[in-house]
Structure formats: C-alpha cells, structure tokens
Length: 191
Image 1 (cartoon, rainbow, N blue to C red):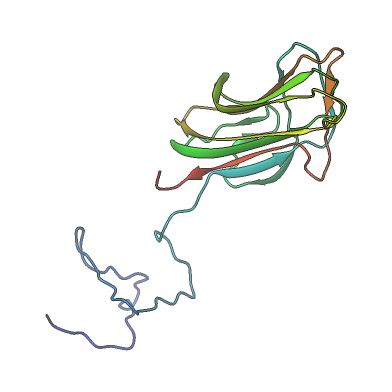
Image 2: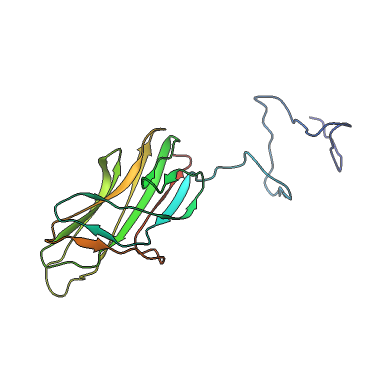
C-alpha cells in the first residue's frame, strides 16, 4: 500500500469536481478520524421526507352517524408539497414505510356517545384507529382523540383523516391556530 501525503487537492485548471476511485471501490475512514464539512454534503445518510404537519383553524361540524373527512387548511410544513389542502390528502408519491399521526378535539360529547378517529389509505382503514366512549359524568366531555400508525405506501397511495360519531345531533371538531386538530407524518428511512 502506498501513501499520498498532501495538504490540498484541487481540480485541474477549468475543472470543478474531483472523482475519487471507480464504481465498486471502498474508501475506509479509520476510527478517530473526523470529517469536517463547511460546504454542502450530499449522499451522506438519508432524510425522512416527504414530511408534513397540518392543522385546521376553523371549526368543523360533524353529523351523527356519518363518516366525515376532517379538513386541514393550514400547513405548518410540507417538505415536498405532498399535502393538498384543497382535498386534505397526503399523497407521498414515494414508496416506503410512513409514520402517520392524527388528532382531533371534540367540543362536546354526551353520555354513551362514541366518536371514532381513523386514518384511511385509499379510502380503507389502516392498522390504527381509536374510539372514545363517554360513560359517566366524570368523563372528559371535550376530549382529544389521537391515533398513529406505521403503514406502507406505493407511489399512488393517499391518506386522509376520517371521523364518525353516534352522538345525536352530531358534534364539532375544534379548529384553532394552537393545533388542537392536526395530521402529520414522514417517510421512515431504511425501512
């Protein structure tokens, strides 16, 4: 093995890049070596995108005995513009495993009423959903329902948040800039 000792490597005059090795080569960085980067690094590790987090700011009425899509009108972030506020759908367009979360805040519950929160993939339930049942006067009458799941997505799958209540007269989902009602997620890299 030969050793090359230099303080700086620069491209030849008129060049802008340097290639180290050929396809299939391995460069070993020994333990204790520090790579210091002051520029832009690409191809190192992975980022968990697409990623998004959206909230709803106006209240939303939910009729009794009817599945209702929860609408989200305000993006806190949307890394790859994959959430559409006009349809309230997340369409990642990149295959992989995704971690998704959703929460709704219900303004009023009555005794024995059940309200359900679901994340759906292409209109069908995914593995995670949550039901809240108010049984007596000590139960929370303005509950927040939360659900999360890990789900596989193809390039054309889409995800929505749906709620359903059997409370007579329906109920109202709280919309607020504080984010009482939200939907978010990201692609899990390496999965």
